Image (cartoon, rainbow over the protein chains, first blue to last red):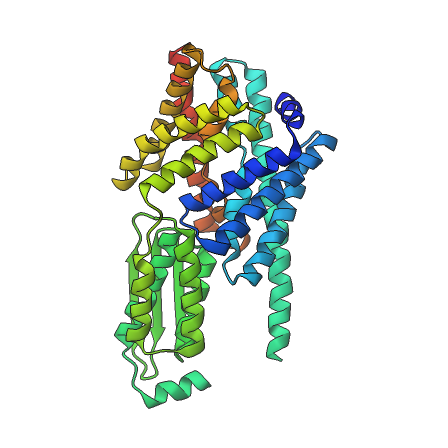
Length: 157
Length: 260
């Protein structure tokens, strides 16, 4: 994992953010998105990935994944209210750059090479990244449910 | 109150209403909606038409709707959802439609017509999806530190992988098989690229290809279901996500083991 991080830090942050944006637009096309929803969800993806990259320089753990997920979840909840679309739409696309595809790959490679120590660390790392994404979504989704149901019940009164 | 007054004026065709909500629920699940969204939308629509004792039960592949009309007659129907065709655009439109139905309680035939229009919405054409696959492969290769050349190769390989799995998706082949197959094709292509000496950045090219196959929607969806307390649907979708992720690894792992 460290090697990937070090190599990717060498790339400029802007280029990487741009690549994340392009990737998210492409994912949006795969899931049939159009118009403003497409651009907004791609913005969320670029935001989450850039936040991750910035944090990954300072923290050598899965914490950057957690914080980046918090940020892109907040963005998704806001955009869902602005564009009157379900938050999942934005969240699904924006989260994709952080989904540990690389982790799955390195875990598989370690297994093929019969390097059981690397298999265990890579596997555990991949699962912890997935858990961090889950935790980040959990926090913000729950918070937004509390906030909006409070607003809703007060409007009824 | 407003809704009840409206319904008193015109007698409601409850069978048609049942048909409508069942169809909306079906389309929602088909588009990739979370379970709570399906249940809440249908509950809201039915209560806006002034019905009582509404019970909706949805899981990842089944939907059950029952309600009692003002005359005390019980209506109950179930619908099986065999395959999902995730489309976030359709999901957004359906969500909007169910809100509008609730606000305006239109004639059921009108709502039905609007629903049919939304149901017609399909994803982009194959060409666009192939282009999207190329961009995903290219961009992820770059995001993980790959060179432009490696990115281009990853993009080209992603297009071939997508082309190879597209007919299987159309034939509703089992998702695990599709991803074992896709992973294997991806691994073969990257090994071939290495052998031809076009690039040495095998790992980054493979990551670019992998990202085309990762179950992002199933993962997000399962998490949101679990958060909402729909553990049954959540676990079904989480299992799907984990199996797909393993399938990609198994498919490419088999090729790498055989070609060592």
